[in-house]
Image (cartoon, rainbow, N blue to C red):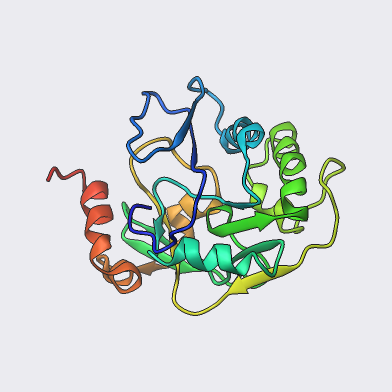
Length: 218
């Protein structure tokens, strides 16, 4: 985030329910939640952030994923003409298993690569509450209209999905709380390598992830 080319004003909310309290060093608005024994806490964390949101545009950032320096600028600009934006053909790299996959999604995006405004923001609370009540991890599918629930606003959304080189990459297999979505299941990865695809996608930044997953110290 420190390398982003976007130079406008922004509110950055961090919700933390990890085992230890994190240290914020870039002016983030910090929300500390007690560690939970629940397998899925993403929707709960978002619900804790929603009352604090003052911005007209929202991007969802995951702390272990990779983002291009152009990511925020491109997403914020696209939201001038849409209610929800994201990246199609999502890229995932499982660093512990040295494996990669590129999804065939072309009508929706993963939450960590999604931006919203307007009607999509109004849909967010209902999407999170549906996930909490149904023990469902897929906030993104409710936001993009791929799943329905009585609590979720069904207003038609204007959508933009980016193609081309990845502007974000979902990183899986890192140390920490085990993930619950399909991307964390190494059995779903048929493409194996030694980090070559991650290097092709994100360049020198790949070394940070490959070192971390190997448990090496620097």
